[in-house]
Image (cartoon, rainbow, N blue to C red; front, side, top):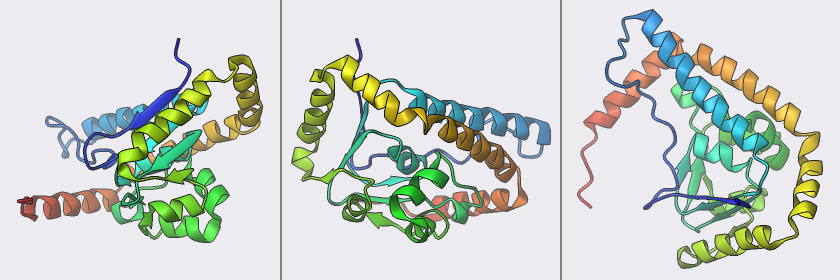
Length: 220
């Protein structure tokens, strides 16, 4: 029986976000094929966010390094988040001509206030782990060699707590909030489809891919 879900990354990064470019075989010159890919891709994102919102058990995140985009927005839907000190978080949606997602149009203004949320979501400012801790998006910043133990301790506490009491109380916390989050997710995903089919996004993506291909591989 699953009592808690623990999410972490592998390697130096928690997550670099979702892939932008379509898979091989999708023809940019075919508007029907392109729209089909966009709609299917956005539907996957919508489903993942819906599942997080409706997941009946606690979710714990152990951010083992930097994160971008969806990996950052989805953190705000977790029950507890722990991070290493050198992690940083950014959501460069505007630079890519996209839109906010992962219910961040609700969760970040609630936690950070509108001014700081706008810096993150609209201006693409990068925030440190300690800044996220200060704004209530990270429970605790811990040394890298203590991250796993700290996250496991929280997960174990969730798992060892009287389950009926925990889940019923968690349901009370989420009951009024869940419908609003689900609706906001739908609204964000509808806009994301529009953005991903726009000329602005196409130009931004081509520029991003071009810059990525022209950057020499690290020798470290």
